[in-house]
Image (cartoon, rainbow over all chains, first blue to last red; front, side, top):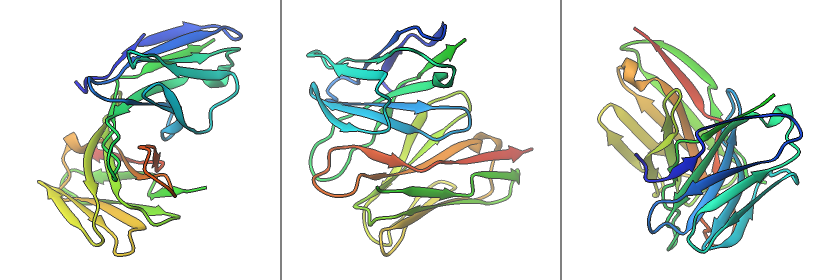
Length: 115
Length: 114
C-alpha cells in the first residue's frame, strides 16, 4: 500500500460524458501528478500540482482539467469523453523538496472505460 | 523536448536466464529512477541513482548509471517468475530547478517462462 488513494477503481461511461477522478496523496506529500496509461503503453504525464498550484503540464487534452484543493487532494476532470480516452489513470504523489527529485508513490489507478 | 528511451520494448526469457533493459536520455540527467509495475498493478519505486558511474545492487538486480549521466541499465540475474512486469526508467525534466516532474521511458515488458 503506497498510501495514495484513488477513487473510483473502475468507471464505465458513454462517449460525450464527463467524469471526475479523485486522488488523495500520501500524508505530507505536497505534489500530485496525473498519468494516463493505455494498453501496452507507457506512462503519459498529464499534469502536476504542487501545494495547490499547477506546476507542470504534459500532453493533457483541452477536454481534461485538474485541480488540487487546500487539503491537497486532487481531481482530474475528463469531459466530452471519446473511445480513445479509455485507459488507466494513475495519480502519484511525492514530497518534492531540495535539489533532487523524490520518488513518486503511485495510487492503484482508476480504470476508465468509455463505451 | 526531453526524451527518455528504453530498449527493448519486450523481453521474453526462460526462468533462470539473465535480463537487461537499457535507458537512454536525450539530455544529461541529475539522477535517474527505476520503477516496476506488476501486471494489473501500479508502478512501484525501485531505486534512484545520482552519481556518474554509480552501481547499486538489490539482491539479483543491478542498476547502473552511465559515466555521462545520459544512460542507465537494469540487469536481473537468474530471473524468477516473480520478476514479471514492466520496468520503467524515469528522469527529471530538463532545465532549471527541480520541480519533481519525471519523464518516464516507455518501459520494458518482461515475461518469464517457467
